[in-house]
Structure formats: C-alpha cells, structure tokens
Amino acid sequence: MEQLENWLLRIQNLSERSEREWRKYFMRNKVWVEDLDSLGYFLTSSHESVVYKGYSEKEIYKAKKNRTEGDFARVIKDAILHNKLFPDTSYSLVGFTDYAEGVRVILKQNYIEGQHPGNDQIIEYLNNNGYEVEREGNMITARKGGLMACDIYSKNAIITDGKIFIVDCNIKCTEI
Image 1 (cartoon, rainbow, N blue to C red):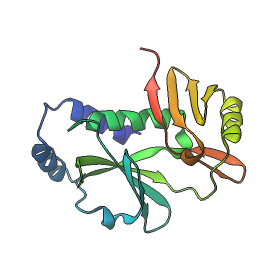
Image 2 (tube, one colour):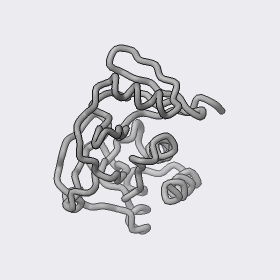
Image 3 (cartoon, one colour):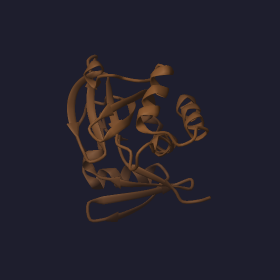
C-alpha cells in the first residue's frame, strides 16, 4: 500500500499536465506499460475497467478508467481505500498505459478462483465482519470505520472454501 500512497503524493504534487506530458513523465519513471497484452490475456471489460488475467494465472490486472483526463489521483485513492476495507483483495500499482479513452492506471490484484456468492451470503459475511449493511435491490452498501463501500453485489465478490472476497466495489469516505 505504501507504493500506492507514494504515487498518490507524487501525482498530487505535480501541476496539471496534458495526457502527452503524463505519458512522458510515466515513461521517465519506468511505470509505463506499452501493451496490456504483455501482462496477460484479455478477460473482460466494463465501463470502468479493462481486465486482463496474468499469464501465470495468479493475478488480475485492471486498467482503470479515469473519470476526467489526468484524474489518476482519484483512481489511486480508491485503491488505497479498497485496501483499507478489504485487505484480502488488495491492489498494488503496476503502472500506467494508453487505452481507448486515454491514459489509465493499471492495478494488480491476486486472482481468486471460485464462484460468485449470492447477495444473502455477502450480507452475512459483511455483518459477521463488523460492517453496517444496507441493501437496495441487488446492490449492497457496507459502512465501516468512516468508509462506505458501494456497488457490492454477486459479480463483485468471489466465494472459495466458504470464504467471501470482495474483489471490486466503489469506496467513499463518509467522515472528514
């Protein structure tokens, strides 16, 4: 997690730059990934990520889309918050790449083999681990320690050997 926090500070301390300037900066700092296929093979994509499974079959790479050009700090902050709430599925920073709509942050997460649990199983897991849980339809929201995890549902979780892992969600601070 220290790596994510260090990059967050570096990016926040730099003035606004164009996508071209960011590419040069990341290349100079040896965190530019020219081709996502060098990390693994394409698995899936969503409105927020392009996902590759590593060739070793032990990791997942997510090229996260920025909401606005150059908004790398937000993507890294989200990963840091995810790591605080769900350390079993923590992210590490791989680098940055160019994909479709512009420069993206590449995060790595351990690959977990398993099935998607039902929402009732997810709610039970969250309740048993000290989260305050709300459910609206298929979407689950969980609060703990001043953080709120949203967008939790079956496809964003994995169950293996009876243990549930939250692998993807949106996290917000609820306290300042």
